[in-house]
Image 1 (cartoon, chains in turn orange, purple):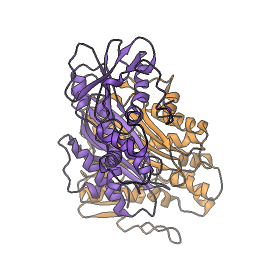
Image 2 (cartoon, chains in turn yellow, orange):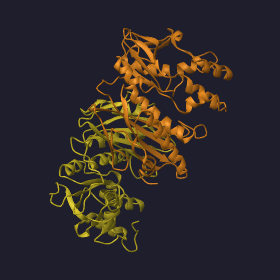
Image 3 (cartoon, chains in turn orange, purple):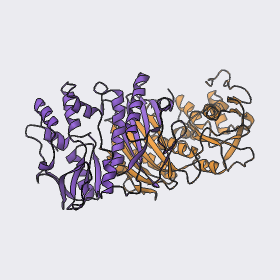
Image 4 (cartoon, chains in turn purple, brown):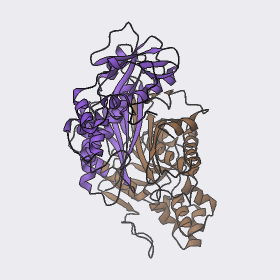
Length: 307
Length: 307
C-alpha cells in the first residue's frame, strides 16, 4: 500500500482544518501553532494488548486510538490541532480493515474539528497503532500534574467506571448492555472540559486512563500532596449498579479504579466556582498518597484489590 | 516498566533544549513553536522489517529511528525542535536493550541540539519503534515536493549508495568494511543542508529514503515535471567502487537506487548559486517521469532492475 498511500487515500476528499497548512503526502505536515508553543503527545495501542478486533470494529479501535491522545491534549488545557498516525499492519490484514481504522481516526478527530494530517504505514507482525496528537494552548499556561496545593478541591469531568463495566461484560462473553460495552469500545472524553478547567484556574489536571485512584496518585506524587476522595461525592450511575448487580461485581469499585473512560480529573482552588460539567469528588491536603474517606482503599471485600 | 517509566528514566539527567518547556512525565510535552507553525512527521520501524538486532546494536537502531525523522524535518527546510517516541517492546526484551535504544535516540537528537520530549512504552509481540519529530520553519516557507519547475537544477546533499553498499555487505555475511556497514547502521543525514536549501530558494525538496531515482519520481509527479539525472555529474565514491568490485555489484546502481542514506535532494532555479554541500546532478524539464542521461533507467545488465 506504500508509505502514506492508505492514509492519503482515506484522507482524500475530507476537509482538513483551517489550521492545517500541509496535510499528508509530503515529507512532513505543517500546522499552525498560533500560541507560539505546541503541545504534543504519543500513545501506542497494540492488538490483543489494548484492543481486540473480535470485541471492537476497526472503526471503533481507530476512534479510541485517537481519543486517548486527544484526551491528553485536553488534560493540558489545550485544544487539539492535528493527529499523525503510525500504523504497523500484518501483511494479511485486509486493506478494508486498515481503511476502516483510519476512517475511525478521522471521525474522532473531526469531533474536535481537526484531521489526520500525516502518518506512516509499515508491515508488522501484529496490528500496532501509534497516534501523535498536537495541540495549541491559546495563550493559557499548560496545566501540569504538579500544581495541586493543600486546600484545593479535587473535581472530575466525564464518565468513570463505564469502560470497566463494559470490559467486565465483554469478558463474561456478553455483548450488551450496549451503553457500557459501547463505552469500552469508544470512550467519550470531555474534550472541552480541559480548556475550561484551565480558564477556571485549575492548579493540576490529567486524564484518567489507568483509573481514578491510580491516576490521582500521579497528581499527589508530582504535586507532593495528599488527596482524599469522598465517596459521598462520587456518583455511582444507576446503569453501572444494575450491570454490577447482574455480574456480582461492585459498581463503586469500577468508578474508583476503572480506566479507559478518559475522564479528566483536576484540582481547583477552593474559592473558585467549578466550570460546567465538573463535579467535586474530594480534597487536597498536606501529606502524600491517595485515600478514600480517609482510609487506604482496599477494594470491595471478596473482589479485586486495588494495588 | 510503566508508561513513560523508561523514557523518563533514560531522560533523567539529560539536558532538554531551551525550546522544551515541558519534557516527559506529564500528559503531554510542551515545546516552543516560535514561527507560529509547526512541522510534524512520523515514521515507524519494525524489527526484522526495518532493522535487525544481529546487524545493528540497539543504540544504532535508536539513532537511525530518530535520524529518518529528523531528515524529514530538514527536507521541509525546517529545524527540529523535539522528538516523541512510541515503543512497543516484547515482554522478554531485556530492559538494557530498551535503555540502549532510547539512549541512541537521545544521542541522535542531541546532534541537532534537541531531546526526547515524551513518549509511550507498551507491550508488543515484536519490537516496534515509532518516532514523531517536530520542527520550526524559522520564518521560511516550507519546501514541498510540488514546486519544481522546468529549467530548475536538481541537486543533492549528503551521501548516496553507502547504506545500500552496507546492506549488500551484511547480506553476504560480512561485517566490514566498517565505512559502508556503519553507513547502513546509522545514516548521516545532512541536517543543516535542508534549511540552507530553503534559504537559497530551493523550489522543491525531499529526503532520499527509498532511493534517488524512486524519490525523484515523487518530486516529478507532485510537480508535474520531468527530471533527468546526468551520470557525468553523479559522483561514485571510490570506496563504493571497491566494495562493489569485491561483491560483483555495481556501485553506480547503489548510488542511483539505494535508499536509507537520508540524503536530501532538491531543485533550485538555474540562476541561483547552490549552497555549500549541494552538488548538481541533473535538470528539470517539461514532461513527466525520471530519466538517466535521457533514457529510462534499466539498471546494470545482469543486476537488479529498477522498476
